[in-house]
Length: 318
Image (cartoon, rainbow, N blue to C red):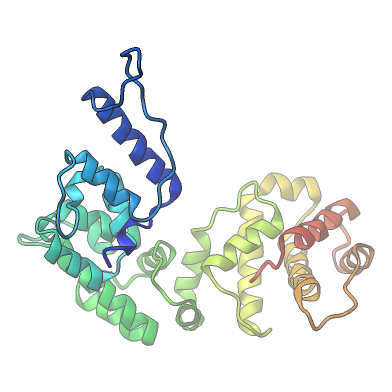
């Protein structure tokens, strides 16, 4: 676990090293040139155990045994490191860094960075409330949801974390990173009221249609087979896309029905261009001709841009 904590992005590592170099220069710790003038050490990229060396230098060059105290890091960097840990590793880290287990601001940040919306956030917290306990409950509830969606939601409600209201449930799903997409698809198929609210949370303003469809399917994963549920998703997306882009609808003559046809065309084109089993790929001219038969008001140029997007970027529902 200790080594995994220091696998930071190179940009953050460089920022830390530059801060270190500035502090060493202020303290007169930098090397001097032969003429006696100070020489600032140029920042270098550091990886892996170099972070340990830098922090040891920051503490005055004293050799330390065991783990490095997170208090020696900037707060933003400490939060970034801890956000990669699960609940078990965080509890283990709390045993190493003694102050970590009692830092409510830290646990509050970890809760809200992983579960962006919970009903309990907007209520007056009772005396003795602990964000650390809440973090463990959220983690337990997410694991339960990933095994059985209904039991997971019931667990959240029993702990007072969520209210039994479609809007609250939709916001929780939209801003949470820990829910298994297969179980989420099962749950949304059963709770169409929650699905309706979840669709309204998407903002497709000024987005190109294929990109908006990709964004939609990142939050609400498409089923693996065509059927009633896929048709429902595309229908809801089409209405939401037109609502978010009234100017585009007037300019191109689009309608929810036309967007519905275009979405199906994009999905079929995505399969055709990305599947290794399809040997004869659909050409741009064929795609324009086939799509214009179903969507008469859409221009050839617009349909051609749709083809180019799929050809260059890839599947809309991958």
